[in-house]
Image 1 (cartoon, helix red, strand yellow):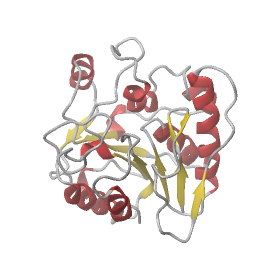
Image 2 (cartoon, rainbow, N blue to C red):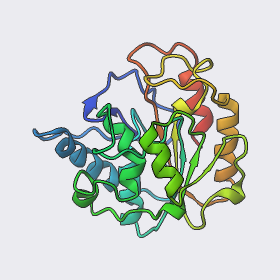
Image 3 (cartoon, rainbow, N blue to C red):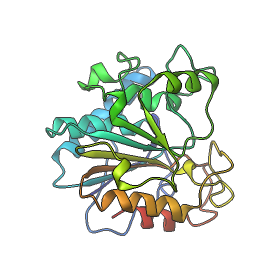
Length: 245
């Protein structure tokens, strides 16, 4: 099943920004969000997505406009009785907390939220159990802020490159594989909101994800599409189609 969530944070995206994949089973999650602050609205959105993930038969793919939906994917897998580890493809670390973020961009907290950071923002509202650091593999991160460098150096989070990733590198047990498409080199994928030069080509990202899927342990593939509100300039649909089983 493919679950499409046409949101960037709590902002409803234009209909053509996340092209629907040509698959037999595609479900669009588009709830009416309540009034309130960003985190209240995100909690409502994440709860709706988590419910869909937990009810999905077999492996599921979630496609959305930013990384925060990975928290919903994790909550949904846990509600389904799984205890998944995380493989996180991203050009950025996403391990800020509210205290360390200088930009204030909520997406920069995504992986840290999944590991128990700032639990009052989302985890407590969703009943989320944090993933232990040693069960997290960060892949392709190359644009890190100083607080993220310090955190990762002191943490038990493992790191690797996209090309260097093998199936044996993945943590044990069921997996949530999160792919922020800005892990791809922006020269090949223009229009990203936060481009980070020096990344791998899309073909290597697709190959790495397929190596993980071949283990049969990927419970959720979560794909974040943080790109500008412009028409498809260079094959976004083709890349999504190559990634989605």
